[in-house]
Image 1 (cartoon, helix red, strand yellow):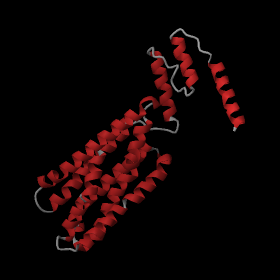
Image 2 (image 1 turned 60 degrees about the horizontal axis):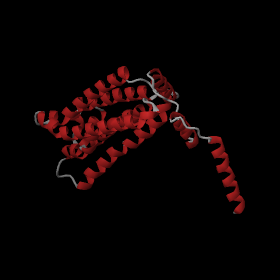
Image 3 (image 1 turned 90 degrees about the vertical axis):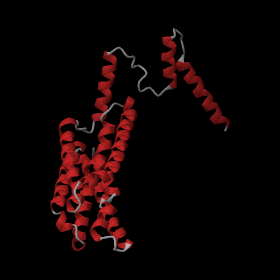
Image 4 (image 1 turned 30 degrees about the horizontal axis):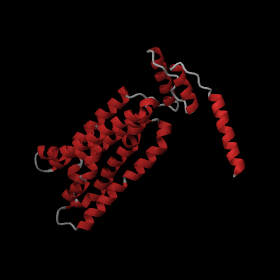
Length: 250
């Protein structure tokens, strides 16, 4: 839902600014204002990275989404005033802050929440699914953005309409984030791993091989399952002696 808002408003920024300054404006003017708008992504990302540990991902994302909704509603309400060549600077600042808040909260926190909300055993799959769904949302938002504009009557409402919709989606996303997404403290991943191991044990799964890095230990467990006997300690000692002889030869 968040990327449905973020990607279209970033990609179609040039279209929006061109609508304000007019088609007759030099290309350098349109490009310059778009560069200024896109520069607002940087402070939002940096400030969000500095705040995420103090405020916590869930709360930071909720606050940023609500602030983004406030800016979106303000831009929609004052669009006829801001969307003029004389006030393009004010519109650029408002639009830039709107995008910056998207990076402050959702841009920093969505993947943190996705990566820290699952056990290590399937964290990659969990994160990958979250990222894939996000890309689908980005495609849907970019595809639907022109159609949304065409649904509004020509004039200021056609240009401000997407901001009303985006702000409403921000409020909905903030509510989902606050009520349905768990907070992730510093030790959350450790707790998830412990709970997952306890769940597997309670349901009869063999967790004896989880987290072992020593290949000798793994082979000893496999040998026990087959009823064989493997002298892991002797093999490791022999390997160590061979390493020492090689070092002395050098």
